[in-house]
Length: 379
Image (cartoon, rainbow, N blue to C red):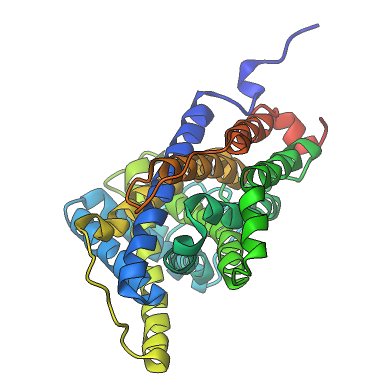
């Protein structure tokens, strides 16, 4: 019997690099959580902390965009796609090319079509995530914060793939694909069960747990729609851009543009939320223990979102979330155990080490599912 051709497997070198990049982004996210949590403790207002975080990222990205003609061209493609979508352009397969008469009308991206307005506001979910970092992580710790975010993110990512939010198309829920999120939830519960029960005994406010869970639900959708923006921004359709007639995907320009749009949308959302909070609560009484590294959250966010925007079209929302969770969990344990950028450290438990191994297994299962199994739902 003939063996299956290697190209039919959904696990390949590109996917392996994508998983590694998402894992690294998770480490960055854990560090950002610690940074934003410490800054939030000094500022005393999570909305102001998150707004500064996003606004600084916008400034960084605007400078980079100013020196990147390809990124500016990618931004124009996104705007053209949105304009075509408002005029009733296809949201389905899209056209692979456009004739000279259509040179100024975006033809759509195969498999995606044209963007809609709600697909470019994923940054609002990122704003909610940073608010939860600033508000919850000082009380929960980085690792416990990851537990709460994971509870929403891992399951939400499964449904994002099923509904086709990410540009890779619909990916049905199969037993093996559902087993990954289940193992991830088991892993984080094993890692932090003692801490969870201890905090319940001390009567910790339920809001510190609920807010990151809600943020995790929306963050999975954010990464998926950001992937659509990245694909649209980076795709140069034949005939549409006369200076670049060949069809190709400019990964760097697409990821940079998607990251910029993400932070602009998030900044607008946060400015509105900040204005409301200041009206209701007034200007916060800030502390005096600021350190320079507390203001690096925006730069870390640029690295985090930019990496994920480039990766999600290649590995899908589920593998992205699982790889990200592995990095976040590992980073959380390292930060908490070493006391990096924190007043005190604690020794990681055996359960936390076991949990990291379980998360690795959770990533490996869907990663090695063949494409034919994903399409038929067999295992």
